[in-house]
Length: 288
Image 1 (cartoon, rainbow, N blue to C red):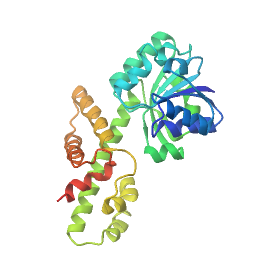
Image 2 (cartoon, helix red, strand yellow):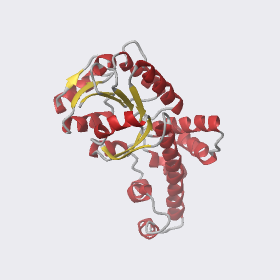
Image 3 (cartoon, one colour):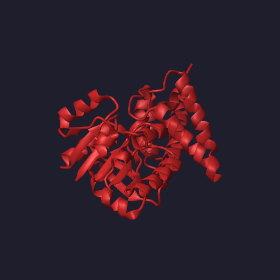
């Protein structure tokens, strides 16, 4: 397929690479042109000077940028992708942003004659690099069906979960779960170490029971070692939790744990951990 990818950060760079390796014809755009040039040197493909130019004549246009404002800039601005999208093409937004924006862009896309799918991902940098992301999608079935084969280039799992915004709402559920799980794991490790337990032995036992989680299996050792450079940053998690809390205020949900853990992450930021990964919640417990 002829596709474009907007945003070559830690996620977008390898995702666009997987599309190229799977045989798609890929044009990339990145705000920092040097990164796009590096990508093209590594993978081949074309570079466009603007999102609008990147989107011209493409079947699918993907984006993975920072936040709602960044998404608006690459879609709705004068040189944004929506001004260059071909009729019946599909725009796929892999950014984690608000369901409100997803619905807005879906309506704007439909008014212009092309499709829109909100498709946030889970799996972090490692998942992007290994092509094993989980992709949560919202939008119209025919648009999803058109985009899904290309998304499979870097996905382990991909599913349409409902109308526009459903992908973003699902990602919010994902982040709410992770916040609680990581805080619980941090407290257990902190408690057990203070109690004088061999925490490797403890985790070996309890990970075979109901306490088991991906976070436990993959992060407990580095949490005990105080190593927090394994992917998704605290700054990004606070952005995502802010989106969750905003949406909860709209739909009437109560998120006391998510709100509390968000405050704990603010303490980690004040400790200098803005770029530490989310497992750094243990650091605030052991901070002297």
